[in-house]
Image (cartoon, rainbow over all chains, first blue to last red; front, side, top):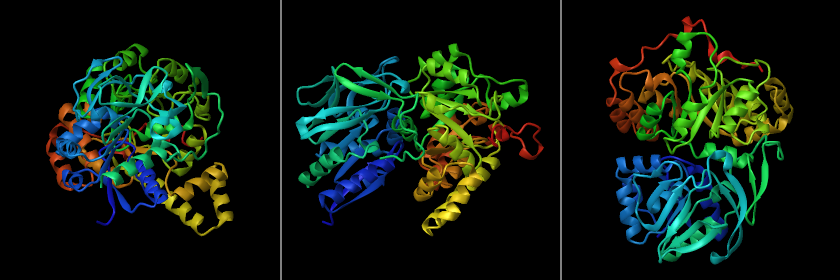
Length: 205
Length: 322
């Protein structure tokens, strides 16, 4: 074992920022490992942990379906591989999604997190916002949340742990080795969530 | 963490308010530039109707850009080209889940304000429309909605960023179906970036100051860009992209994504072509997959295209000296 192999799904979206944040997290934690962009089912087969980044969930979902990555990711998550879904990634991990304006969506989803998502829950880009949010449940008293056309979680099953809320809206969850946030930790300088995920991957291996 | 080079900090476009028990800020550079980061490795498609917007979304477009006429038709029609009908923009916003952008005229502050009120996700201050003010671009720091601007070289790009642009698209020659100008301009930008990076690495401050004077931008934005070795905002290629291989080629030149204007909806096989261009943009590193994408289209159904040497109207030159 030469260290952890963490992948960032690099179909579309803000991949580079997640690579940087994960590399810095490994370094600061003193954990040996590599972080790579991954696109193909073969690359996914070798991973110890996966981050599905922000982007457009319809695009990432459709294109991952085309080359067989979606199926492989499903298989790996079912076997316990830790995964971190951010914004579009959170949507992809969910069982059900609807859009605030358009209504029920028929888009490819991974169907793991027992939650129902509302896409664009806070409005369009002009309503995108930054705010300090609490994440005490995983030992992060304050986190700088960057919400960009962000989704929220409108229903959560009994196995889903709610990590944070913005007023009445659920914005971060955990279910087993899966974590999901509707905001973008990779756009800030705060590594605490990426470190939390790296530790989760470390524990599993 | 994303680069915030050139950010002015507390500007008019930033809105601070308390929502419930939370203090929030909207319209910051992190949010505006961050929005553009979410589009990376994607294709933004020009559309004029709800039907086209839905075809674009189904094909995997990362956003749509609403125009009154496609650039090729603007070129044909002549006259003054203005922003699209608000009613059509709103119908499109109500029918797709992906971001909706719209174009305003260069320097037309109020056209942009109306687009912001209409709640579009990004405003393109675009040379495809007839400029309202050739000497002053919009001061984009006054807006909460992010802007994308065109640029033919590094100086234009950095000037637009200093005015508050959250994203750049290297200009081609719109509505021609000819990718040649887009290729020239992305190479221009890359060459100039390489040049300032080497000056920076040599530690030659004096030379870097003369670059800032030459480009008519502040020293700090030149210095930060030089240290990054790339533009501090997301940069897409645009202008004349008509086929999957056009898109893939521009991705190899270091673009973060692609704008397709007339190329899709002025072709005879728009649906297949839209999908094929998305596939080629996503999998540009794999020539076999790009070949499969190219197979989805028929060259006999591509838009005819124009030789850019014969053009009477060169849209790319609009507003470029300011």
